[in-house]
Length: 31
Image (cartoon, rainbow, N blue to C red):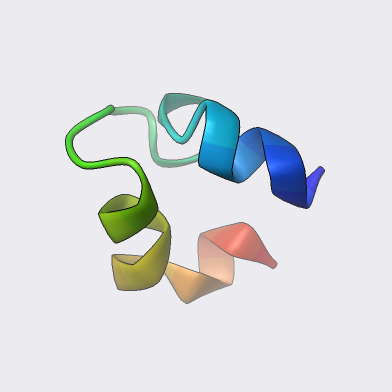
């Protein structure tokens, strides 16, 4: 669900701040 990360990053990080920036800060979450 890599697309979901970019679409709804809050589901991964648990918080929606910048979106793409969040996934970059937490690469382990994207994996």
